[in-house]
Length: 148
Image 1: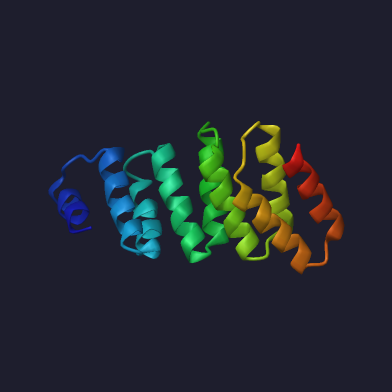
Image 2: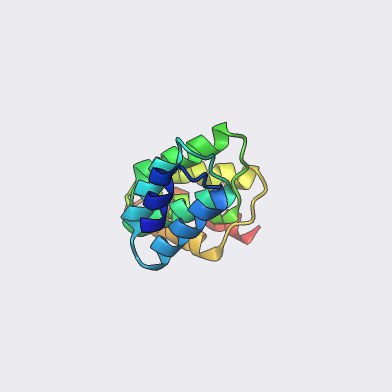
């Protein structure tokens, strides 16, 4: 983080790979909020890539920041970035953990429509979410999609 501050104040041009390295280091150190703060700061300087989005979504997942995860996914989509399995899994897990039932379901359907192969843990999270909210019909739908 000190490197980013020093580079920024001295006018050094930083590429996305440098930002990604710092964001990843912060995430690995358990500083998910710092990841989000530096992501916001980088937006005016350099365009994020898939690696950036993946790291920020993982930070949102760890911190349970659903609103930020949805904004990051929305911005990635507007920039023409195709979401991959890791991205879908992270944002759906954030939604599941924060009881954003409808949004989790929408993202799940979107992932299936785009042909992304989802992880078993994601199906499990959705089943728990629907089950804990007495949505047995949704549980059956997810289970059937998991089996196909």
